Length: 537
Image 1 (cartoon, helix red, strand yellow):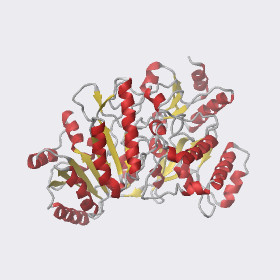
Image 2 (cartoon, rainbow, N blue to C red):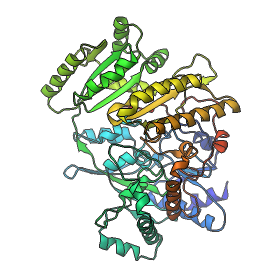
Image 3 (spheres, one colour):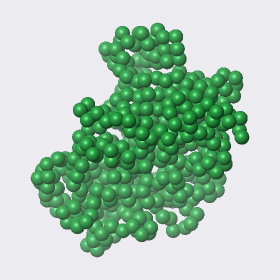
Image 4 (cartoon, rainbow, N blue to C red):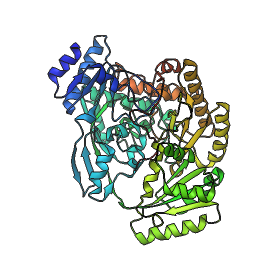
């Protein structure tokens, strides 16, 4: 057996495997990339992760690098959950929900807990974390927090294993507490000193990263501008949230659920004209919904090819002919009368449009809220050598630029000889596209990266951000804008503070090139291990 695996198995509660079948099973996430790890670890406790990180650190000090890639359920579409070296998979054993305080509305849990498991547990108390409804339900909470800066809305505290194996507990420190931390002669003390120094030395650059609730951008470590407030209090949590395992490994979390209605109402609106569907979003927004989804009809056609049909879709097609798009509106008021009133007003406003409207009152034994799961179906190309991989999921486009963007998106699709089926969350200004492409040859893969590059440029040209719903991973790191060179240098300095030996998920967020990534593109894409990218109720 591999000597490293043998040594770690001797000292860990969990297991380390070098079997080729195990390693190959973790070679893919939901991106187009493929990396076979050298070994796979199933930690059973924080102490196991600490031992792995400490061993990797000690090897690095001797000139030998053992990269560590923390992995959830493999739902990441950016290549952020795969890599060489060791894949650390907490979901196998570290999947406990320790406690829920209904009074303070706080839940303490391990990173391997799935979104579905947590949602079901919280539902018993009438609570939920609403932001998680958009994630794949088999994704892990640790993966969701590590991938999305928007997770800050529900993260209270984190336990993080640092690159050298030390454990850091994040919390808000007062100015006095910060000075005490900075005085500690430890790796944690060095981190606090260095991060504070980086913030103090770059005030103008940080001003350009000011967090704006109206603009979503997960590129790099933009959360650095939230670490220190004007009164001098300090909290490292915003750095680890969205860092994709490149600054530390999350081993435990305390999250902040909220009380929500467990039985919201849904309205599904079908359109034969995409332009009318997009115009109708303003009307929908005026109904004060809790969420809105826009889905191109291509996703429903793909589902139908797989045998998944929707009665409302068939009825809408019979009345309107070929459909172009579907809009799903969720109304979450606790008061049933208020929900019905909103639905009635929405129907009245939609009446002048050529649309087919269905609510749950119209359909027996149906949960229309589940319709959004249609986006988990891959677009089924007519030719077997074609695929519909996620090349850029969750980009941000401001509402006032979306009409112009969507028009040019069609032009871009024609330029590349493909279709770009659109889906998204209009209220949050987050959108997704799936192309239909061939990726069997080297030339095909180069064309795919060219499509991605052009799409990134188009998004930026419309004041958007390519990484609005999650981190940029490996794929996004290869397409960083030269205009943001100063930001990238700042982020690299920050990365070096936490990971001076480059052992934590190398190649993610930094130092990835299209040339290198093209070699790692899969020859086929079947959505393994998990498809789906938009919403899973």
